Image 1 (cartoon, rainbow, N blue to C red):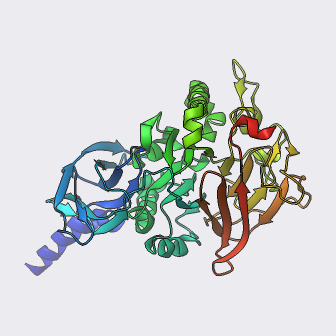
Image 2 (image 1 turned 60 degrees about the horizontal axis):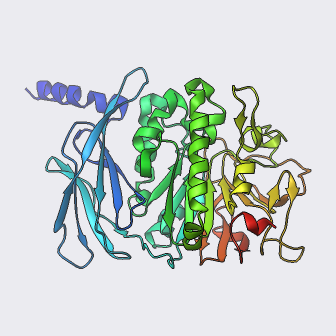
Image 3 (image 1 turned 180 degrees about the vertical axis):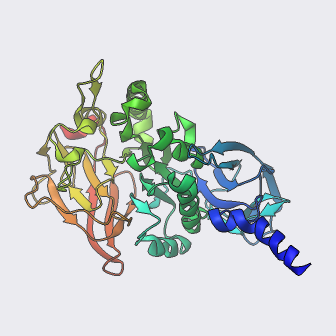
Length: 439
């Protein structure tokens, strides 16, 4: 009898032992937050492996625990790998949140609840001075910056995280189990603050399906690009990959460009730019870089910067658009390094002055921050960079940013190799925003 019981137990657990699947199929996991872009709201996303209800129970810190409850919905996501693994992605949007209030929550159903987490509702005031951690290229293997980011997030140092493409390396691998593992790893960050993302080249498998399904970004415009406001800044997340994966639809490239131009035009209306003077973009592959790995940005005719002439009609690049609408700061990753550029346009430096290059700069400022840590290690630099390269580091690390007010923005680079030392910092100061700032 004991032998029969042991055999039955083994057979029941065999799929878990072989494939690494959780034994409780209705247990919530991979919990993460995102900001839907509407003041007083927060979106909670999680995964189960069987269909269950989608409920978030929450309450104010110090008040009655879980005295509020809201239902959402789930969608079936079937990974395109050989096993066609199925999972349910649950989404619930909390509304009517009090700005700056701390909420305690858990998510799931009566068939299984997550751990208890907390978050601070975002301040919807234009006088809010939000703080961010930003990085790209964070993987399951060698995620060197992860522990420091976990601790700093739970110390409430950040209001949001900007992950600028390339997750897990790669989410689709091992029939998407690598994606599961990565989403579990970042839960200790993403369940506490909004985790805002954009796609990178490592998300391309099966037409970016793991990226499109696992994350919940505002607007859900094609699942690849969107914009949102926080403090005195207008943020734009875009896909640089539309320039490189034309097999998924050349029309995506043109749709994004049309959307982006309209979004920038709207953000530049005098009444809007007066309220949100900073325009900050994030996209995975940079327009400029000085690495020696022969990526697109090492070429003068970068697709992202100048467009593609082999499409019909020719596809426009982004640099002139950014310049025309007065984009202040462009954030990138992809290169496994940190690089700060002088203000640059058309491959030429346009510093504010020799003594104060970032005070009233005459072109957008570019930052590359792709060294959070992954199995591909860090990249090497070209020993002879162009004049627009201001500072470079191969240390593992990430960037901190604070939008201080309408005229001041602060950036600093943290080296994980040097135990959290700040190895670079700048203040970007602008008395005027918009295209006229370049004059």
